[in-house]
Length: 201
Image: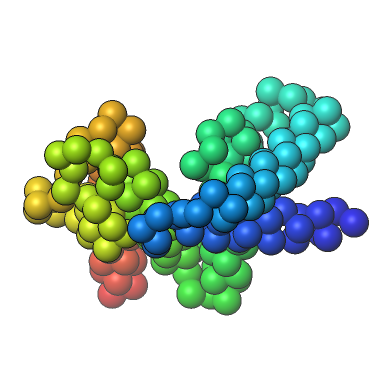
């Protein structure tokens, strides 16, 4: 039963991601489609909150449960973070990679990379929706948003695309932090690999 519920939550996260992303790929959303998107998002949000509340009520230590489930809390409290429920899939994938003997350090690096790309995609969607109708903005479509997100998360920062809204700048800060973390993990993994080679010699 628990497995079925977890699979349902993952499916809802995928459905939410599609509904959430749709407005970024079209120039204008009709009122009918927007109503449908709103209904889908509310249903997904309700399921996420229900899962979180059930976990809290049945946890022996509610404080420990909250500390161990930051993604569930974030996806329930902040609308644009609800697709982070898909991080559960990424975690499972990382564990599988680790068990296949590709290496724990490599598995961690891969998980961080996938997480960063996923957050970059979400940010690209959000920045496109937030910025394209704002006067003075240079992010007018998803292509612009994705280019901005990738140059920001990789800490390249060409500066040809940049947010002008407060929400966009908050997203930029989050992506910068993610990018720095990614570079740090990759550097540490490469260093650990060289140390392992040196010790084996």
